[in-house]
Length: 393
Image 1 (cartoon, one colour):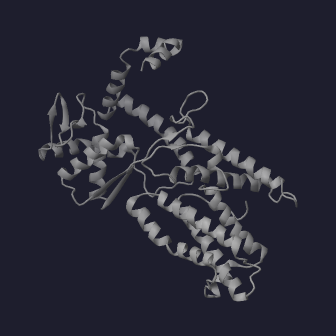
Image 2 (image 1 turned 180 degrees about the vertical axis):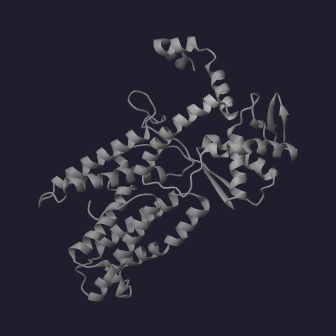
Image 3 (image 1 turned 120 degrees about the vertical axis):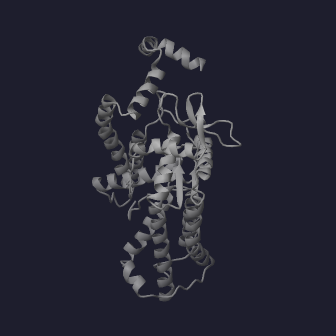
């Protein structure tokens, strides 16, 4: 805190503003209360700011290929907040404390504040309104909150309040996650010391992926195979996939260290490694001039002779139980672990078992089917993580 104070005092612009507006925190709270109360000027400003904010956020979602079936902002629930507080009062759960309306839950030192002294509502009030809406209007039976682990106490209070409020049959789960750290073990920062913005992170990942792709393509003995447009497309797939996978492969409760070199490596537990396995299968079928759909339609039986074939087939067979575990526990790292193991087993199989040059036609057909199944699972599994594949890398 002393370091921050010294930094502020040394910054002439910030220090002059701090001196000029010593009561800025209270003033900000007052404006929030005015907005909640329906003040015309505040509402007009809010309506002016909102479209630009939503557009900026949507641009990032579009870039990451993230889509929503429904999106209801916090403001959607504003008309319901007063009724929530009144309902809590009527049930004897909420009462006044030092001018604020609070819910006191046994076992918690802090109260759950649903209306502040100045009349403004809180995140707690909105969260309660959303639960009521989702249970009564959307008929939800399970609600997941993907919010960082520092908010754990808030959700413990929220869930306890909801249970006493009368929604005992609703399953509520805080899908908590840790922080992203730099190599110094501290929260990821830019060289200037600011928090790294997501958009600049995406840009750099794509640039790094492009450099790797261009270098590898240019180094091919027969000459480069990819057009500039294709290089850019693959770089985006690999760059964005690398960031998503790096975030999802860790136990979500833990902090993790962000490392560019490891994230985009084509060996090890990375999206690139799985994408490369998929592209390798596509290369087999391309080289053999074999249509994968036609192969499936022939319905040839698998003939598992080698131990590596059997191990790969067994891993493919475990896919459904892996997805079930991911869904129940809301832990995507179960899926990344599965895909990493699948890619490892495929690599071992590929190195030990000739596919196109198999001695028997039935063995060749079986191994091609096994390759196709592997690629389909990798492609589907990565798609569930929001990661695309490409047939050439």
